[in-house]
Image (tube, rainbow, N blue to C red):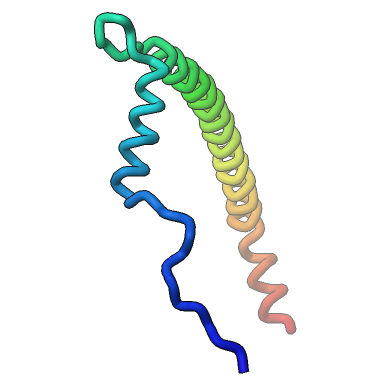
Amino acid sequence: MQTQNLASPAISALPLTDIKSAGHRTECSNSIKATGEVDMEPRVTELETHLKYIRRDMEEVRGDVKSIRHRLAYSAGGTAVILGLLGWIANSRFEQVISLLLAH
């Protein structure tokens, strides 16, 4: 039978709060100026780049929506014209349609 060693592990772990603060300190230490200010320029530049791409994509979506609206309007107009023509034909030939329906 095997025995299990329940002793504490040899590797010590930092508490979660210490790990977060240590990572934050190293992240901020890369961007700290000599006067103690945090350099925000790279982060702002990255946000501006993302915003530029978002705006470009939104313009593309707006163009697609306009195209879809025009297609729907033309389709609705065409459908109305065709239904109007069919109604006019049916109205002008109403007696013939009735006689065909009653003959069978």
